[in-house]
Length: 211
Image (cartoon, rainbow, N blue to C red; front, side):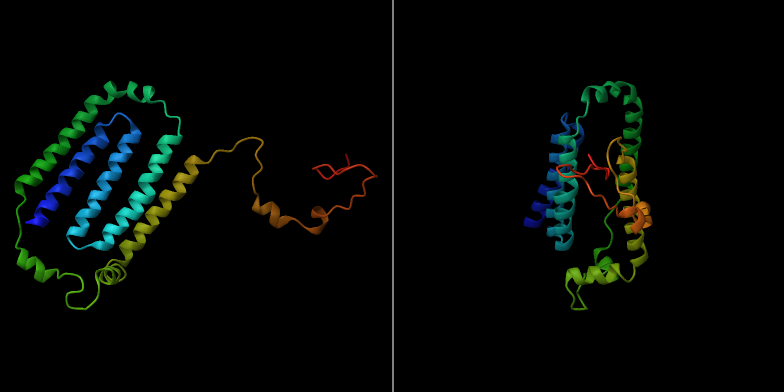
């Protein structure tokens, strides 16, 4: 009874937070509602006994991703007036997508039903039930045996996303010195060392000459 009440409490909070992420006018408030949704999702994972997933969700998504969103939204000078200017123009397309999503969810809810929990328990035993391993150890064994290729593929997807973000955000500004590895590797003692004897009371210019 207590677990069911906790489940419905966390679930209702997640749904409410997700709606506020979309409906909030201030992007900073949207990120804060998103953080609240992540925390309640971690609570749901704790209810079902997946403490590792709960900690990962709280540490990675709340401590890194959502906070990064928050800092980016707060630091960027976003012109929200221009963003809201095209709201009426894109409203019909957004309503069409929302209608398709509602129809899909209604179809799934209409045909969905509870399965045989006893059969599922025999087919998919709880982690560590027979092997004596903990939840985290069982998850690690499962990831690096049956799902190793999918796990590596997800890492490649994240790597491509990181490289794409760096390429999109890279800006070449004039007057800024950048490191050139080929030029550094091509340097020899002939063009790297200059013997200069400046006169008394005169310094050396930044270009290597006498000033």
